Length: 427
Image (tube, rainbow, N blue to C red; front, side):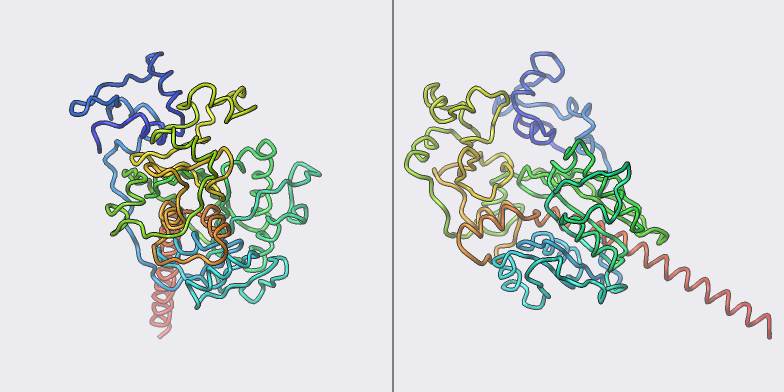
């Protein structure tokens, strides 16, 4: 455990802004000190223990042990994209039996890197999943978030028709896996005032699954140098006796330096690769932004001309005209690195991150290649689940399945002993 945390680190860990922390400083809720070596403004570890969100950083609990799978565990993934979730599950020890994806370039990426995977390209609605019944331990899917029509108080399976969640639910119904896992963006929690996720839970319950209370996982707590968040819904087959525990957060926070330089995450500096460039006007603006800075670091007149109508709106808008610092996790990557007002600028060079830099920030391995145009490659990476976050979830799945199959084995041994005892008594 570190003795001190910087303003940026605390903001990242709490999921708040530097401006909010400064307000807390003024109100006395949190008091900064000066670092004894560099005189930077920092917070003492013991002063951060009051926050429930990051309390795990300061306790003495050990990391969860890494368990290898007791047997081959098969997984099917819908809406697989470029393979961030599938690669993470593979690293945890799961076997990807089938991946479904509609985007041709993402399918090409999957086939390029794992020729042995069965990749079905096209509309998931056309897939018959019944041949996989009884052959799959885990079904996963990151379907787009869509609204339902609520005819009554409880949403049923048939009511979900017309949405991509229905296709995920249909796969659950036809396959009947031991575990089903849906992942989505943070906005799912508030979508339609929470009714959408309640409807999903209702459908999965109808299909025979106990739902673990959904959880928002912050990627920075799972060895990912990026402030990305994902919602996970975990369903456990009723009557199977499955016990699921969420992965324990890592006490190490990784930064952009860890992503792009040789060090704790990668054995080498990031490889060279193609990347997009800023138009001349934007490049001139971004050149004025310091590392860790954003549009408010511009002269007032440039702030107004660059932000236009957004200048007068409330909120910090800290992702606009943003140059990432080496010593902070990257903001959540978008699907277009030079997209207007959602910039993620390199800390030293006035340019967006390259494709391989994008992939590093998402914790893809350097040997994972991406197919398609440059624009498509950025979109595939930007849409992916960070590999290290997926691996953490995969290890939680393996622990759950190991516990289940151990219990099954114990029950068989007990039954065999009972049978042997009965036979002996009959003799």
